[in-house]
Image (cartoon, rainbow, N blue to C red; front, side, top):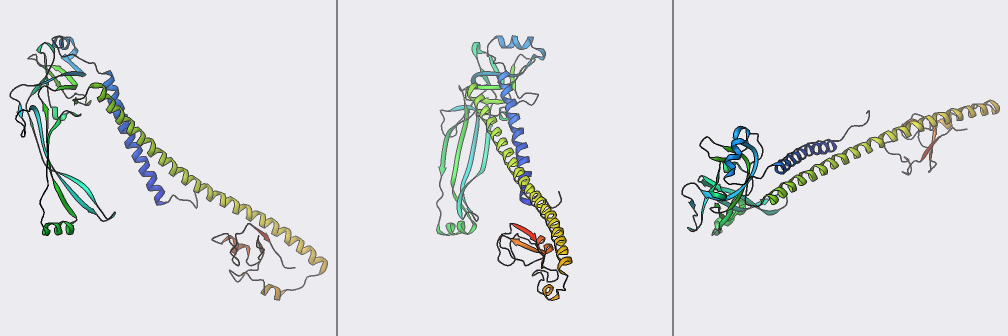
Length: 357
């Protein structure tokens, strides 16, 4: 494509669009795969028949299944730091600093959060079903989903002196305070587990992360809500992939339109050149015929006054329309950066050959 090359902005936009489209499409396909796995996963009741079911299953294992039961600790449960009446099997304590950071670009203060400390305590627990049947939950921290609830939040706002305030403004960071959050998976909570069910040699049924790297879920919500959440996430990634692809298509369309305009200008210029050469030859023939009839007279004075105003060497041999100025040669006309008359700056609609009689 001689005379055409994509701009840096077009190349950057197209590359970013293709990259983002690929990433979003991959995330969409992965989310859709999770949705299909959840749709095909069997719902197993935690009762006395579960152990017998696993015994007759090849490998004593269900690779992906859904179970629901009540949380019960194997040993002593954990106690909340702020309320001794609340006990659980998993406790997460987080300290988050809230601060303001000065943005030199927008010239405003923006909110920012930073985790200063996080501690997780856990005791072994099971999901209790009917007939005192239980499923031991393994590696709960590897599970996705919301399986803890906030039982306490406390915000500590600092008392700042004048010197500290001045220091914050000079550094561009201002602390708003510290938030303490305590989350727990409480005893007696109904919990859904989605993963691999296995029967150990001692007869213990265990829920663990799938060996085929399928997603492992623990959730306080019911199965339908969990499935809808993942379906909405898949739809979100799909929308982003489509938008990114459309943006890339728009960039390609714009580059193609610009290339077409360059080709169109080139075709028009070639057509003008051919038409001018034809008309120039026709004018020269008519001029020669008239010279043979009327006699040829040397016109040095006319030639001196008929010099192109641009190159000052070639004779003026074209007339510019619609302004009708005769001011340049055809070679200089083709070299004009803009199709405007050098004399009056009007747009040039057409050019015709011109000869002095």
